[in-house]
Image (cartoon, rainbow, N blue to C red; front, side, top):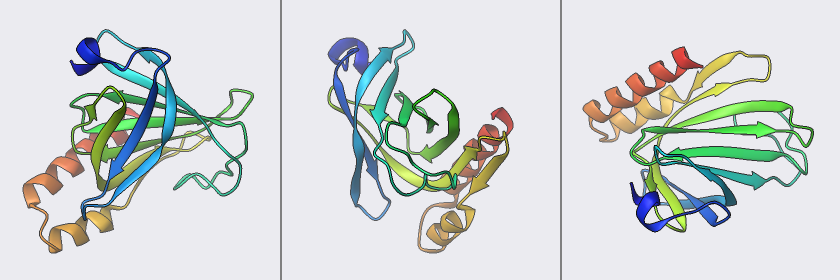
Amino acid sequence: VVADAFGPREGDALRIDHGKPDGRLITLGEGTVTGVDADGTVTVEREMTGGGTYDGLGVDREAGDVAETSLKEGRWWYPTTYRGRDGTVRGTYVNVCTPVEVFPDAARYVDLHVDVMKHPDGTVERVDDEELAESVAAGTPEALAEKVRSVASALENAL
């Protein structure tokens, strides 16, 4: 596991680099590593600014909210749980992606369109299957799309 040998370590800053299938790279932000588990899971917390809503959750983003993201090298998904300043869970968003790569200063992956979320009331919702279908029509291999669907189904059942 890269984190064991090179970092990041608790207290380090870590960027989350969200690649898109068309080659764009979006930095979701930089957070503080709050934990590194024995299995290589790196937990990162980011303090959120106010304004707008959390993508897909339809919940207002408020200043002081905290996003806690768990990144495990090689896993085809990662969750981010959003909490209010008082610790109340505002929702969980799980991104299905290429296997996560963890570097000393950043975690990287390519977004594979489909996401699964758990709303504050406990409702689980899977979104963006139509984006995956469009991607397949544009040339994404069906075998990769099937892996995405399989991962998303497992996440739906687990949440």
